[in-house]
Image 1 (cartoon, one colour):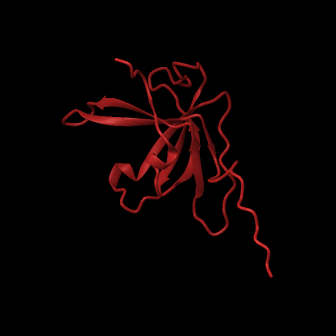
Image 2 (cartoon, rainbow, N blue to C red; image 1 turned 120 degrees about the horizontal axis):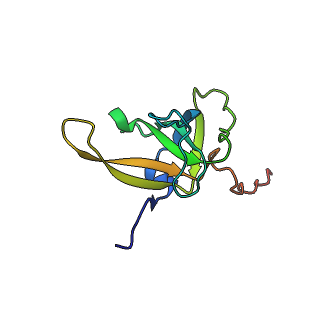
Image 3 (cartoon, rainbow, N blue to C red; image 1 turned 45 degrees about the horizontal axis):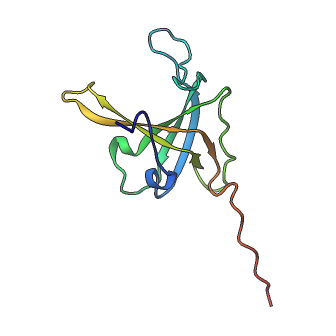
Length: 133
């Protein structure tokens, strides 16, 4: 099979209405209590708690975690005045399907990964200002 591991996906496909970050924390191994590391890069894993801005999202889909492998804790964008949460955009996202057998019946679940986090539209050129006549 040609596809192995996580599947690359655009941020807008996962979060078409945008996303808001609540915070970032290190992911620790439940048994060893040591920081979890990414199997590919060997870097520590961090979890960003995210609220999906899609008004149609319900239940477990409304609040998710996006994992980022990085040497140091990723820095969230600055707060935006008037908003209760920080709007974010994830860079180079990927989706990793897996079988969740923790409930009564096994189901396919998804783990979200990203290479970084930034403010929405960060790094994009702003449209030139129009002359006011």
